[in-house]
Amino acid sequence: MIKGEEVIAILEKIGDKIMEEKDYLTELDRPIGDNDHGINMARGFAEVKKKLPSMEGQDLGTIFKTVGMTLVSAVGGSSGPLYGTAFMKMGMSLAAKREMSFPEFLDAFKAGVEGVGQRGRSAAEEKTMLDAMIPALKAMEAAYGRTPDAGKALKEGAAAALAGAKHTKELIATKGRASYLGERGIGHQDPGATSFTYMIQTAAGHFQTRCEPEVKA
Ligand code: ADP
Ligand code: MG
Picture 1 (cartoon, rainbow, N blue to C red):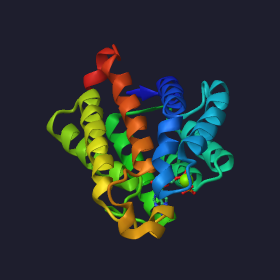
Picture 2 (picture 1 turned 60 degrees about the vertical axis):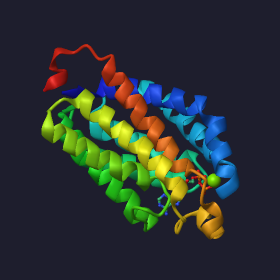
Picture 3 (picture 1 turned 90 degrees about the vertical axis):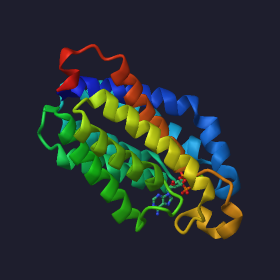
């Protein structure tokens, strides 16, 4: 089972990773956007990190909802409401739970991904964060179905997210700022798909070093 304190620890690491990759994420947003994705994400996660201590002892629903609301209010760009929606939907799915099984996490993540699609009126293959999120979801569901090991599933999810982010180079954007460029966006990797890849890589990395006996539950 995954408890709130562990989610908080992962969020802390995600915040650090986003700050580390701030310049690269911004650079990706230059040719096909407005040169601010890393700045937006770093601002959002700086606020999230400030709020983490106040989340200690809260249930998972509250933790995820607080993260989502913080991203919505702190981030100016479209990634704020989109990631914000993802975390808030996860929070709704996990309402009042103090711990979650990996299948419960997957259900919540699925709700989060669907939330992004609804909010952004977007779907797969439109050169957005969904092109990393959807493959990650599918890969984790398939991996956990084969072997119920959360660490392995996250690792496969992270690999699928990375492959999905790289695949965005081949796509023509039909949503977001990159859609203004049409075919000229080909060859450029989507910033949002890349920031999501960092999030899931961080979560997978955390599980790699996790030493709880119930890791295979
Ligand atoms: P903005 O585009 O407002 O400057 P950011 O640069 O922070 O915001 O985020 C851009 C990222 O948001 C894109 O790389 C893409 O992944 C994601 N994005 C933009 N529009 C959509 C949408 N409609 N659906 C899903 N993701 C989107
Ligand atoms: Mg931008």
